[in-house]
Amino acid sequence: MDVDRFRALYAAEAEEHLQRLSESILALEAGGEEASQALAAAFRAAHTLKGMAASMGYGAVTEQAHALEDRLDAVRAGTLVVDAELVDALLAAADRLQAAALDPSPGRAATAAPVGTAGRDRSGLARPAGVPAVRVRLEEDAPIKAARALLAVAAARAVGGVTGTLPAEFDEAFDGRFLVLLEEDADAEAVTAALRAAGEVASATVERGDAQAAGRARPARATTTQVRVDQRRLDEVAERVAELAVLQGRLAEYAGARDVGAVNGMGDVASRISTVASELQHAVLSMRMVPVADVFQRFPRVVRDAARSLGKDVELVMEGQDIELDRAILDEIVDPVVHLLRNAVDHGLESNEARRAAGKVPRGQIRLAAERERTSVRFTLEDDGGGVRQEAVVARARERGVLPADFEGVLEGDELFRILSHPGFSTATEVTEVSGRGVGLDAVVNRVRALGGAIDMRTRTGQGTAFVMRLPLTLAVAPALQVRVGQEIYAVPLTHVAEAVDFALTSVRVDGTGEWLVLRDEPVRLIRMRAVLGVDPAGGERAAVVAESGERRFALGVDEIVRREQILVKAFHPGVGALPLFSGATLLADGRPALVLDPLSVS
Image (cartoon, rainbow, N blue to C red; front, side, top):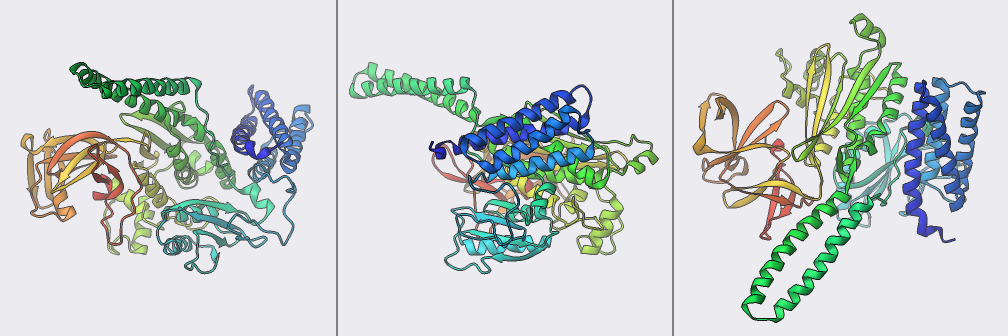
């Protein structure tokens, strides 16, 4: 059998069963009436994986699945008692099975690779045996790959734990693939986040230095090009394509005629083509949409592992899992949400003893919810912990020079969040398996904004902290406002826009703190885009776009609000010295290029 034809399908199916296996093991720990169902589900997942691997000739995966099957069978027979230690062992076995499934070479051994071997990819870069590393691949179209690699490595070194790179130098022949070598106890996730945040990094994958590390690591995600699509959506696309073919034939007939009826008929066909094309676009985009449950299901394991390592009792509550979002966005928000979850367990929630002393129940709670909101999806992640310790933030900010040494004031919500998301900022006094290396919120903010979204934070002493992320529904197209500043047209995504106003219908107030647009008797800070973009003469703005980020509202003064339009956002790589105001580029309906303006970068 030619297994190459089925590798992609195997990878997609294996990822689903591996996820179901991990979820079932976690549910097994919870006990209760559902424990027997969870055990049966875990056994089915392991058994199915074994059969799939055997049919593909993947001996290592087959052996790993069979060994896990045996342990689950012992639980079913009552010879093994379910407790936290057994669940740890089962999850570690599931991790080893996943590691084998993600590299299912037919001749690969089921045990750890012997000393002297190393991981190798198509670039031929071999990882030294026993040395953990991050394997990095830059985007194919990244300009000056050597310079981009140096910037990425510098960001990784700022985290700490980096011992070198392979190749050691990036010359003219450098193809964009390299290894970042790590110390044994380095925070590989933090280094990976820093590398990805450096920009133009297509992939960054952790490779552990020993077999035992795999059991401690968060399970890797399989990468697959397979997407499951509802049959009804495929039927809808097929119907629209068929109708377009018919309309094309009618249009060709009318084009050959010259009478008035033909001209009128062409107009009717053109109108129908426009309608069908719009329906086809909607149908195709809907095929990219998947429920957020696809990624939410990975997070209970993250919370459990973090809580176990810190000796805390934590419950994760998830809501809105049926909300649909673009698959590309879902994949990109996994790492930011993992950062926030781990921070909530470590920094947000108090110890069991501290919670009892504060009159709280010992078990802390983290709530992760998704909600549809106009043209975006809002993710809320909140804990019922002690809130951000402002005094610790101020002390560390003064120590690092982020705040003046004589600062004695109180940080407001937005100011506090800006400090916490400053690159490399951390209030942790020691490095743990969960956090403390100063990489986290800055990486989260950068990733969310790169997706065209926004994030803000609110915290209350003794009651907890909440992060709110607003993300567009899809990366393919986005509703936006066209605005003019000087002679240039810019696009402003509606994800950030609350309203648009005409200066003639409001008033502008000036005081010692700046200019304010008065909306319904409420002052909103006015930022004149002519001054920001260096367009002369200044002061020619006649309209404003009001943007929101959490409790913050501000108005971007523009010359004219042109129209609302659906735009296709493309990646944008600004030149050296360019203003950091743009999140992408697009082509307008008339074919002209325009930059996509990020309001949050302006404020």
